[in-house]
Image 1 (spheres, one colour):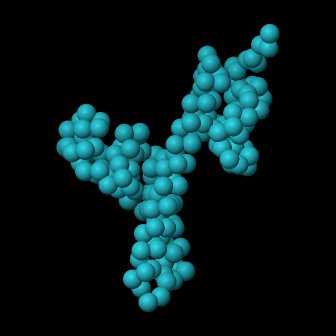
Image 2 (tube, one colour):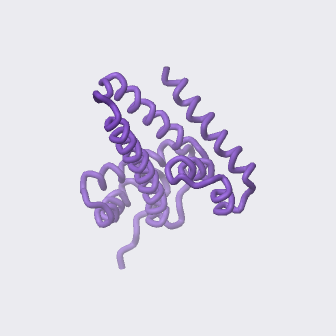
Image 3 (cartoon, rainbow, N blue to C red):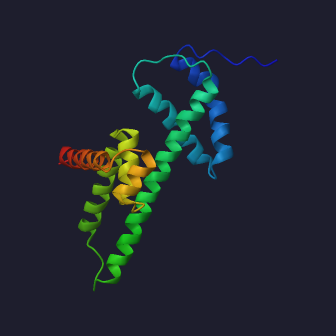
Amino acid sequence: MNVPPPADSLDTLYKGYHGWLLGWLRRRLDCPHNAADLAQDTFVRLLSAGAYVAPREPRAFLATVARRLLVDRSRRQKLEQAYREELARYVEHLDQAPSPEQLLAAVNALEHIARALEQMSSRVRQVFILRHLEGLSHAQIAERFQVSSKTVQNDLVQALLQCHAASESAR
């Protein structure tokens, strides 16, 4: 019987399970390079999380962290796609395309929003995405989370404040 290696430190977790995680991600992603990047991002996330506590089920633990990163990646891709679509609609109504400076400013703004989204609590991030990317109303979001419309409004205000703070800190 193949006994899984111990995971009593982040170092032993990495040494014992990086290969497994990489294989797990390769089966789920089309690109081995993306799988390798996401495997590394998984361990970077764990490094930045603070004090390490050895998981009882290392594979399930790593799979959960990686799945959350996949969701974040998907959200970021949706945000980028929405921007590209909006830019394409915008360009259709212009005599000329946006300047390189305008494009750089827009890309920087998106990067700040993406960083702000990573810092938000899960519900606040989901509320922001449902409202601004999916176009759901406050009432629809409130029903989905079983909270009041006022709570949704407060979450959106908090999200916008974090986006603003992220853009201000970059200046």
